[in-house]
Length: 282
Image 1 (cartoon, rainbow, N blue to C red):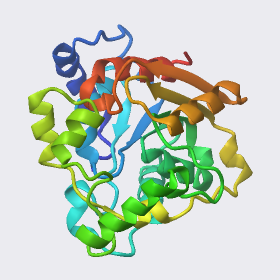
Image 2 (cartoon, rainbow, N blue to C red):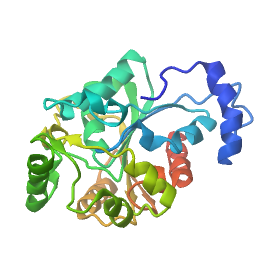
Image 3 (tube, rainbow, N blue to C red):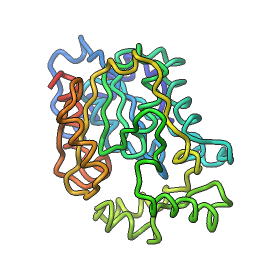
Image 4 (cartoon, rainbow, N blue to C red):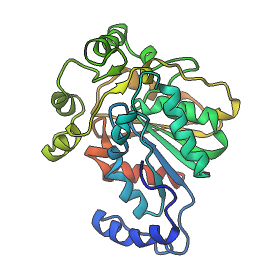
């Protein structure tokens, strides 16, 4: 997990150098009046907090606090993986960051399967969340699991991978292709350094992350504004359906990025600009 509760002095000290490196302009009033919003960024399955490495300094350079929790059993917490970890645990991971950090006015961002997590989090602590951003992410209805949102043949593949390569409870990847081909051909990551960086860090995800359903029982959880961001260079009928839902549903906004599925890796500047715009009410 990234460093929690940095002091205001630490944030301001980092702003100048981060902005210079990122080429992001600072507001003249930044030192006197930091932005109130706090971003909490939730990574997808198989990733970790490392996934947001390029975006975090860009958001902080614009004056935002940023938290990037690693979900239990993934990333630097891979050594804690165990069969009973599932979506409920991952929801609790993020809820605890909000509660113990006493975070308010949070813009909660979930990419891909991170959409399952943020849906559960807002049901638990809606009073702490100002906005939800589904970044090319799954949007479950009450009682749905991620596998419920996939075609039947895809659901079976998750169980088969777990049985053949993951001791029955870990999902090593979601397709028969090796990770390098998934990263390059399916996720559209073409920079060689980015590919190698990801290959060194991608790891198996507990099956329960995909099989446990999301509970949506708190009416207050429906109040925060939601935005669906569709990454147009990633064909996915399910995400197209979520995008169509967002366009026609009150309390939803719809935005697009001309990027592949993982813009925090491939297009961090463009993603940051969109998130800043959403934070500013755009």
